[in-house]
Amino acid sequence: MTSERRHALYEELSNESRRYMAAYTLFNQAIADRLGLHPTDLQGLSLLTAEPDPLTVKQIADMTGLTTGSATRLVDRLERGGYVTRVPDTHDRRRVLVTPVPERVARVTAVWDELGEGWQAMLADHTDAELEAIIRHLRKAQQLSKIQIEHLRGAPLT
Image 1 (tube, helix red, strand yellow):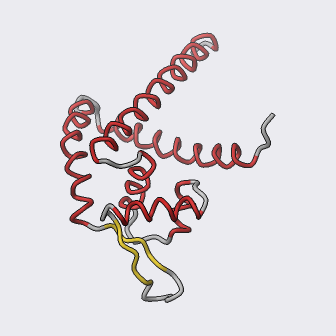
Image 2: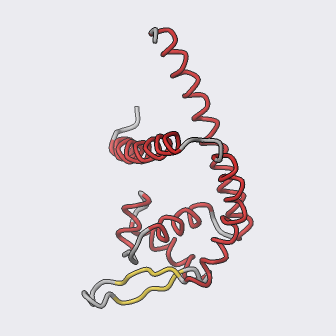
Image 3: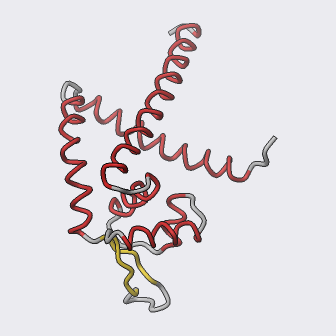
């Protein structure tokens, strides 16, 4: 592949990535609006329920990039909405774990399930190898995003 073709592909990928991220941000806002949640709360809940075990507020802060104070307020809002509870850690009584409430989370899951059919239909014509490539890309993008977030938060404004 020529360097000119590669440059054109990078440019197109950059433009489509920006469009995708904007579309996903608006999509997330629409789901949050439907559920009566703040978009950050929806994503915090999404990350929390993607983990196999309950998390501490500190772990939620680390996952989301929020300060512990902001993560505490996020958990407070989710707790008021009935989406999570705080329970003492049975292994370390000094710690409190944030645990999703399955019945309440089912409300969010129902919306995702309804919309998930469209996503599956969109992906239906991809081969297994293509789906594996998309998964690989998403994992690499998550890792790179974490690195870039740390850089942005640590770098002084110019």
